[in-house]
Image (cartoon, rainbow over all chains, first blue to last red; front, side, top):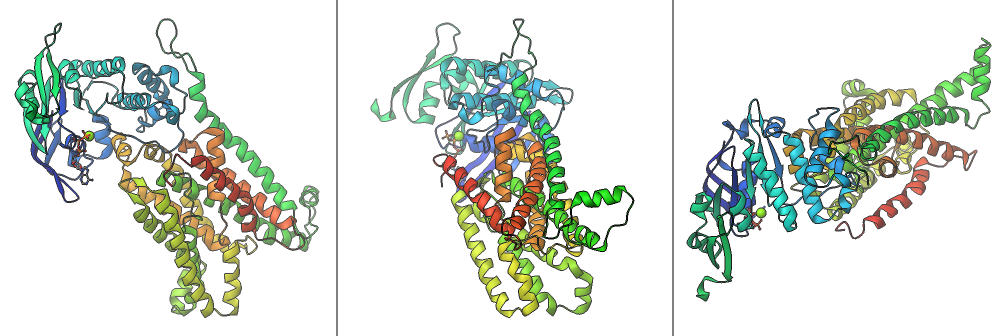
Length: 262
Length: 361
Ligand SMILES: Nc1ncnc2c1ncn2[C@@H]1O[C@H](COP(=O)(O)OP(=O)(O)OP(=O)(O)O)[C@@H](O)[C@H]1O
Ligand SMILES: [Mg+2]
């Protein structure tokens, strides 16, 4: 379980999150949605212990503030919204860096497997900095997958925290990466993903936490949160929620930029 | 490109991607051999006619060494060689660690003012040390200058890091400018101190600005070598952490690196190695930037091999530079700092040019 209670985050003089409660269960893909600046990244960074916060965050029943970095690293991997690399490492080396805690010998093999999962096995020896934006994002995902290794271990489920994992990807790779996350959840792991694409979210997520200006506007199963009324209120634009033809999941059709344009 | 999956879809051993770290590790051996060759050559070069092979021949025949031979080898050339090795390794490793810490290949103790800070510490100790109570002075002894240099380097590294790094992101422009400011400040204070110095202190001081191994002695080595050995050995454990830091502080923490503790250790290593090196040899520049850069070009940026290779190549390079400085205007001697600057400054400019457009300078 990920359980955050009464989270308040103040950055500089902004109170970016205020009194936020958040839950995510293993075996599920929990999406964090909301407009730009609503606090999605901030919430994710609080959940991963990157930011000072008031309130409590528990991961698998343990307060993350009491866990050392290596212990957290063995439970969860984190894909940040943006990453910059300082030296000319290759794609494979970047993934191997994620295995900093050892497992000597298996390093290269595990890293190559992770690269192959994001469809980049053939770019293993390319310098990371020479890859395209979407390719870099997939290498970073491979790094996270290699670090976490398996969805469930003896001492509990493993977690993926992903900040906009598909923001730079083409449609095929969006589906592929979301499927990787889905499979991870189906195998018993937990996934918390910040998402902008509502239709992908509707297809792949189990639950949604919808943020607006640092508060949780709505949280619950996809079908409950994804209503025309709630979404248009959250994003401040006109849209309509229908049902997609084949799988019958909610389908969001954008309409007009402002609510007033009725 | 390498085929990573065989027809059955099983992963096969990928040769090309694996080889970079392995090659970097094989380089340890070649650099060690180079180091030995350079060291032997250095023992044979000198103003007097003492030749290493003459000595070796007499030793092999069981003859006694002449007094002259013994003095030249044991008290002049050997301490100078050991000091060159130690200082070269210290400067190169400091550079590599600092570049990893600042996540930037332009960081170097000499360029960003850490050496100036260490030099100021040393000058303070030389000039004001005499004012200390004799008991304390006797206690600190020969260690006073290296310790003061270490402290000066430590304070300036921390200052620099505070000024140039915000939330794990280092601004190159701020770092270089802060380095200039620190260097200027240290220079100004040193200038004042030089006015206060007496003649013998003045002689001690002159070689700071130039950088030289000419003052090498076993006494100085006894003070500096332990610090250098400890910090260079300590730095060699930072490989994985510095690799992780290349992905940014937040990601390094996610991977399981205790980032704050590791940064403190890195700063201590830089300060210790730079401080001790500066204390015994003054401001020898550019070793810390040239050596890691060449090694990154040759065998990749993996710090697990880079730090050790930097120590080896740095030691070899400084001994070569020292030989050049002794030979090129013989019988006089060029300050070694001039040699390293001539070799290093173009490399620095080259890195700058290559980075233009990539880095917000
Ligand atoms: N270091 C900071 N100091 C002050 N304010 C900050 C800081 N970081 C973020 N903020 C503010 O906090 C708010 C939430 O930022 P956050 O990055 O969480 O948004 P987000 O929901 O992830 O947006 P996006 O969809 O654009 O990624 C924004 O208004 C932002 O300006
Ligand atoms: Mg964000």
